[in-house]
Image (cartoon, rainbow, N blue to C red):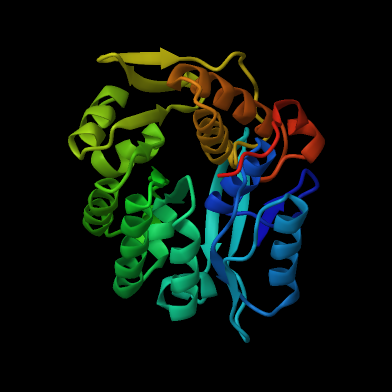
Length: 300
């Protein structure tokens, strides 16, 4: 559940979350998109599923746990930049990969999936047993031909300020990845990277063949034919709210790469979608605002 302060000081209720946002924007970009999580049996959980259905996101992998409720986050913005506050210690999503039936269903589904996307927030909420089961699912999907994509999205509160645990967990899962899409400020907060080139070198050393480091209004960096390449956003925008800027960038990038576009063209298209999203408050921009970028759904 997302609470975002409006101009009059009151809070508006919506639904969001980093990987959920990406699933929605990926569907809008034309990918056949599904989302895996666990929700409660309350009206807000119903609302999350209703939103996913409206957006064309497959909800077959969402389980329901009676007596529980989804997590809550609150957004405060200052000159467009956002700060998050979370209440999710009892969220049923934490137990997803400890539910045997759910794990089996997800593993079966991902055996015919083209791309699996998750984030550092995904990793921060699971127990050690959940992480083990999640890793098994990723390895199985990778053997079946799926590409694994990851955004570190590091939030130190989610790791209870245990940066070393976060680094060890990220190394473990990055070694499985085909695509990394981190933000430079997150990498600097966790790894003390000097710049985007340092982050790209470290990620490549873990065996990740494709990486794009997002740097907000400064653009994005990637390696092209052995050289660091920088692409700026096509226009300078004064943001209303930067929530989901990175999530939408990732969605567009993955959708365009799935169409066999070059990394360069995918980054340019991803900048376009993120530039639209930051013009609107909250995580999910109005559907009509992103229609210009939509393509017919792909099968994977």
